[in-house]
Length: 101
Image 1 (cartoon, rainbow, N blue to C red):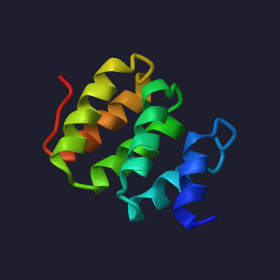
Image 2 (cartoon, one colour):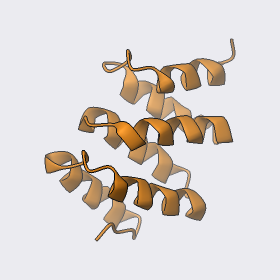
Image 3 (tube, rainbow, N blue to C red):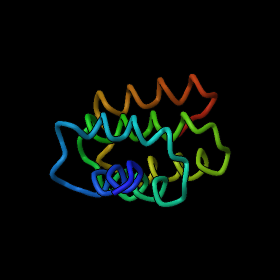
Image 4 (spheres, one colour):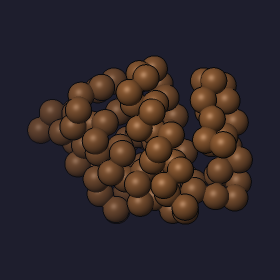
């Protein structure tokens, strides 16, 4: 398997909680559709800030307007992004001149 295939496989897995931030960070090196879609698929259902925050960081890292638009909508639609994770999310979005308010 290629590194990209392993990363996509792990991004889709529910078993990689402990290592998930590392896989999300390494996804930065692969801006392919499959990787981006795997990140969004997990972000849509993530309920743990230790999972969704690294995804948000990685998607912002791409510095892509279409991805950013999709990111804002996904964050707004995932009501499980809350508490300290939401506060941290708003802070990093602000650094990229983005907002969910």
